[in-house]
Amino acid sequence: TMPPEIRSISKKYMNNPVEVKVKSDSTGAATVEHVFYLVSARDKYDVLKRVADLNPDVYGIVFCRTRRETQEIANKLMSDGYNADALHGDLSQAQRDAIMGRFRTRHLQLLVATDVAARGLDVNDLTHVINYSLPDEAEAYIHRSGRTGRAGKTGISIAIVHSRETNKLRIIEKKLGRKFVQQPVPSGKEIVEKQLFHMLDRISKLEVDEKQIAKFLPAVLEQLADLDRETIIKKLVTHEFSTFFKYYKNAPDLNTNEREREPRVKRERLDSDPQFSKLGSAKGSGAPMAKFKINVGRRDNVNPSSLIGFLNDQLNRRDVEIGKIEVLNTVSVFEIDAEYSDALRKALADADRGGRQIVLEDAPDKDFSQRPSFGRRDEGGSGFKKPFAPRRDDSAGPRKTYSGRDERPRDEKPREGGYKPPFSRDRDERPSGSGSPSESGNRDKFQKRFGATPRSTGAAKPFSTKFKGKPKK
Image (cartoon, rainbow, N blue to C red; front, side, top):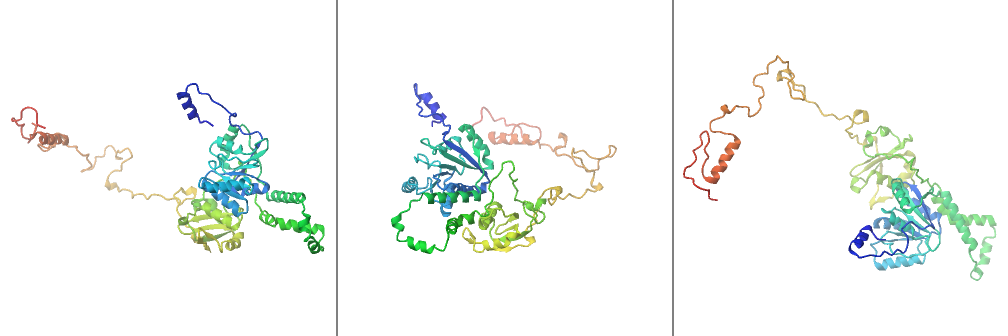
């Protein structure tokens, strides 16, 4: 691609330049299907895992915006058991070559990379390109999606989008010349079913090596002689999918409708909001709430959003209702659905945050500070008002309006010794020889420069007659 600035320079300084195009302007390959999932920002990683689980044979690149995000996503995927690794600018050339060697031989299914690090990669047969974060420019997205669907093969470009990125998606559609297809986030039931049939398909296509199992087969048949065919199949499926069944048993729905998304709740100064004036959840379900105190606060870089995420991670749920939250310097106080009180105590018994052991305690009602909101009384605030000065006595003189006029009757005379503006004396009242401030200043300057005093009225000395010609500098 040639930027417009370089094109203008070539036209200005080159004689009859010739432009050679090897392909048309970037519009995206016709063999690539463009889909997106609309989710909350906090659920993007969970959606990424569901996309990988729904496609057991996935072989693709996950694009992130920053090196830090790239490494964090790759570390999470590896810790969760996925064949993934990171590729970014902080790696040495030897590390880069080793990772690319594993990816080309398909020892890695997912390569988490930045745009700069993935520039110049030539990998064939990619099935998916997953945009964990949309790029700032539409051209970058077109280059990303062009890494799949090559040589006449089909590919899928997936964008995991939160509600504030929909405008960016429309810009990419306009540049791409194609529409994105919104798909629902796969449910736990769909993922388990897809994984199950994928396993059965592999078993049905598996070639049996008679020589290797010949010596073990009699013992195996004798061990399983008491089990019928149906029982053996059930036990095999349970053994292979116990982890999937347990993980996706109560999987929440991660879909977000742009028109029906929940309003953002302002977590600051919740005491002044009538919605939080009584016990109850932030969603207003009326469920009984339990108050807890935790030994982390602002000094530990904790805010309401990070605290909610920490509690969700510890409980391994995202449907727990949380009410009031107040983050102080060293501790934080919050409300949570009383139904999950025991589960929270058990989850935080051995938990730590940033190497610090978490201590959870029950908190009484008084632990929520009653801070003034400095708002109006009808808005739930404390009604802070500036105290007024006492009313002036009539003996102190008439009160003045905002225009500065006295509020006295016209026939009333002003009191004696009243206010007079400064410099109200007439010129005749001045002491002799005083002069005005400007007149006195000019006389001092003249005397300092010429050693004489100019003629003036008053007590000043007459101008010296010895002064002749121009003054010496």
